[in-house]
Amino acid sequence: MTDLVTLAELGGPLAAIGGAAYARHAHPAAYWSTVGLPLSVARLVASYSSTMDACGLTVEPSRWRALAVRAATRREIRPVPPRRGVIRPNSTGLRVRLRLAPGQEPADVAASAERLRHAWGVHAVYVRDVKPGVVELRLVGYDVLRKVRMPRRVDGGLLRVPVALREDATAFVRDYRAVPHELVLGATLSGKSMYLRHLVAGLAAQPVALVGIDCKRGVELAPFAPRLSALATDPDEAAELLPVLVKEMEDRYDLIKARQGITPGTPDEEITSDVWGLPESERPVPIVLFVDEVAELFLVATRKDEERRDEMVTQLIRLAQLGRAAGIYLEVCGQRFGAELGKGATMLRAQLTGRVCHRVNDEASAKMALGDIAPEAVDAACSIAPELPGLAVVGDTSGGWSRIRTPYLSLADAAATCRESAHLAPDVPALTPFRPYVPPVPVKASGTATVPRPVTE
Ligand SMILES: Nc1ncnc2c1ncn2[C@@H]1O[C@H](COP(=O)(O)OP(=O)(O)OP(=O)(O)O)[C@@H](O)[C@H]1O
Ligand SMILES: [Mg+2]
Image (cartoon, rainbow, N blue to C red; front, side, top):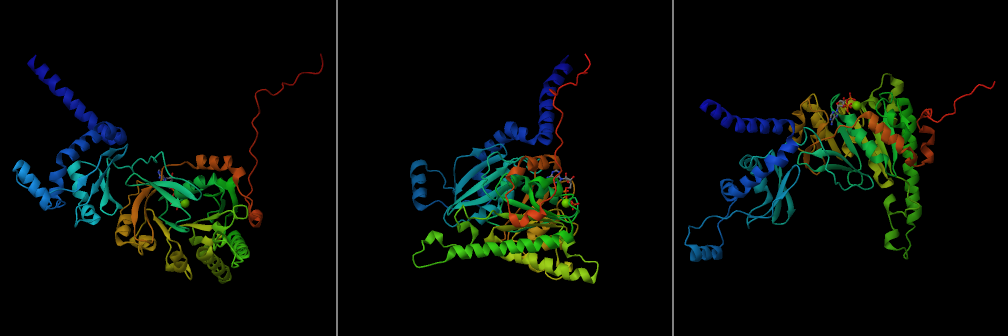
């Protein structure tokens, strides 16, 4: 009997521990909200001063404070940690602001991020500079990139697409006006086309002309044909499309120039050097050019093709150099993008400010995307596991980088979004000859169709 009682007494807690361990692995978001969050808050509150002390983030108290403590309590005078703000929990972690003591800098706190994460039992700790003297600690409760769920509220807007989740649980927004051109690199099956799919689906609802060059005979971009203003599915078609885009760009510059006509009386707001300064009624629609498998444009089989290749590369470089002010943006995808592709490759790459590097097969490929950004970003890209397609390291030429992952979006769903927004495809007359053919959708027989009746009655 006593054995049974002991078993029952032990069984309950053991089942609870087992259940919690299972929930932590299988349903990390639910585990965080119910168990992880209260535990981490309790640890943070209880051990804040001692943890900060152990991390070397405390400072000697001011003379006035020391005098006050001595006069009031006669206690020994201890070093003080940075002043802590209110703890703000959310569904993926929690945030807390710290006021740095004089002599401290955000890098001091960032250097201790790994120690803080262990002390408070969370998946990761990130430090963000909020304003001089104040940093925000962003504690992430679990690996948010394993099963991506985008935050519900994200600042969208024209030419801004929330395309992936960062490892600190914030949305990574592809902002074409801030970073006009981008290079998306990765080995085969690493998730490049998924990234493009999100961009196309995100831009489909906006007044933006989408143009595709997909030298895999269109298998990646053709499903979005209803919403595309132009599509080239082999290098020959691309060779016809690119000069038209360059001409469109030049026409837009002429339009801006005609509008400028700066005379002494011209109001300041009418002086512009890009399409965004033009009045809305005259402003041409932005164009986003997607190039999937860019290497196909560079590879040539015969000497005759070489001339065509050089022309295409020059046109792409010109679009990358001058496109932004004319509202033309590039999104270039490839498996490798190095000097071995031939003349113009590195020059084009240098124009692509945004860098996204998915899983790669060798360090050299990661260096092509991130080498001129940060050596640590190259290491991070080389350690991406094949089991996590869509995981990438994103950097920009300012030296910052972070891990991101796209949520899963099926080709059928993305294609359906494009079909539904087909009527939003802007009219760009120059691109009309390149508009892809879209087969008409068969009309389903309706249930109320009249039943034929025999005429002899
Ligand atoms: N974020 C993601 N979550 C889940 N699965 C993904 C994700 N991204 C990609 N995948 C899956 O990984 C596979 C490869 O993705 P994708 O076609 O985008 O790769 P790719 O880099 O374009 O490959 P390729 O170079 O062969 O065209 C697809 O089956 C896709 O469904
Ligand atoms: Mg692909």
